Length: 318
Image 1 (spheres, rainbow, N blue to C red):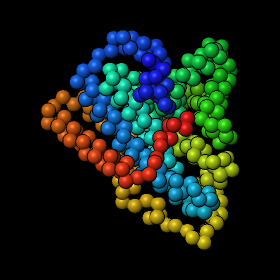
Image 2 (image 1 turned 90 degrees about the vertical axis):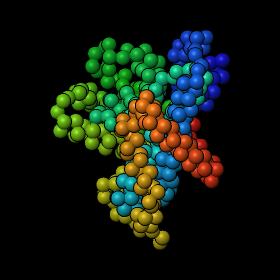
Image 3 (image 1 turned 180 degrees about the vertical axis):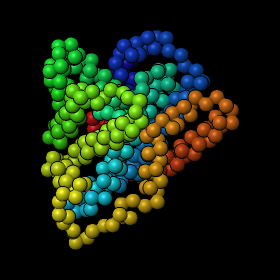
């Protein structure tokens, strides 16, 4: 039954048997759980259809062109839109799987915990794709010795884990470099203690900006077809190349219009824990507002699906 459990069957989250072993025989299916599952499913569907697909279309328009054919501003726009597309596609799929699990009485573990608010790459990987991170920790990092054999061995183990994380996502050099990019900064953070928490607000702001900077550049490697394109794109972001203006060039409004701007604002707001408690609201009036809002989101998402072509989850590739 576990092998055939379709909320986690096709692509994830990576649910281990012991996570649901007791629930198979002792789970409780009730009205409240079903309603919560439906709400969680609608949130995930909205993330995918209204935010990920919208910003993904912007990113696709940019990344399909030669990396030296547009301005640095457009290059940054493409990188940011893809960063949000990836997060809301992945977390949207996970929300839908968790929602389906609740409908059938299963409590799946959370898979994304607002990773874009992280203040280090170490923290980012504790919050990003948690089921994948814990899988690598349990089956690769700890068997290699973890942090039990001294600092140098710990750094080697981290290097191996993130090399394999890159290869996990695809047999291409851009994925390998993306994995090593993340591993490099995690090792640097371990060496310097940068990943440790502090109460200094200014330092925390710097840490947050540093983390955003690092993972956005990493996502450019992740999105690119090869490292040649990624390297040219990264240089373009910093104005380090001569732009070759094609015969037909497009200004900024071609890539992003009013609806895309709204989706970008929504992406920023939903990337922080601003609405994380909304499904736990017990006030009747507040709950009615949330239910109405979710109903509207479901109708808009359904209409968007009906009007669009086939658009699978990025999650399915990995």
